[in-house]
Structure formats: C-alpha cells, structure tokens
Length: 157
Image (cartoon, rainbow, N blue to C red; front, side, top):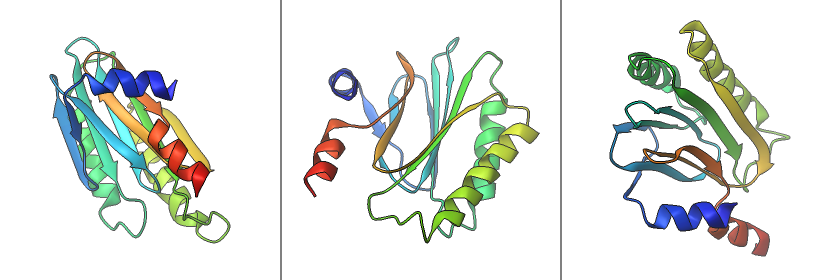
C-alpha cells in the first residue's frame, strides 16, 4: 500500500504542513511526512475538494487546545458531508512506558473538542514506534500510511 501511495503522491503538487500550522487548499495535496509524536487532524470535503490539515505537537504544547479549536472552527464552516481523521503515532525514540501521559492527554483534548463541536470524526491512533504520513489530496481524500522511506530507515536502525 505504501508504495502505491508513494507513487501516486510523486505526481501531485505537495505542500508539507509544518508543526504548529494548519493549511487549507483545493488545488494542492497537503501532507505531514514522518508523523511521530505529533498529531495530525485532516479534513476533506468531497463536494468542493477542499483539503484541511493540522500538524500539532503533543509534547509540552501549551497552545494545543487553541490550535485544535481554531482548526475545528475552520472545518465547521464546511457543509456536510465531509471526512475528518485525527491520527498520530509514536516516533522511534519515544518510550511509551515512561512518557505515555502526554500523548494520551493530547489525544483526549482533540477528541473532546471534536465531540463538543459535533464534528463527525474517526481516529487512527497508533502506539507503535513508527513514523506515519498523513495526507489530504483534492483527488484522493484522506490518506494515512507508513511511507516506504521510513519503513526502510526504521528497520535498518
């Protein structure tokens, strides 16, 4: 699957969303490569083909709640139906036995805000020590996978 997504994305105009940012577009593909301990929230409107992507740090981020609320305000203006996915993983240097609380708390904040604002959403929280990619494409919608380059890097370390 990752190879198919990699090949498909090579042909698209990609915009990488940096930590602490969110982007909205209807003509480019938004992506967060190497999503480790950060969380991504993606939204896609199939009628307008608009793509929305938030990339937020979960580690000692005092602005997390405000960042998510601003993002949810933005996507709440979309008429339904639309898709929303909240996702995140653990990076390979993360120790879930000692540092688990910050990720759980951040995930709860995101889920609570989405529920309070009555935004229909799905989650894809991954507790494995891997890097994932979260992408929103005007053509394909929301894609969440593990890029080949990160599979190779992690398996050879």
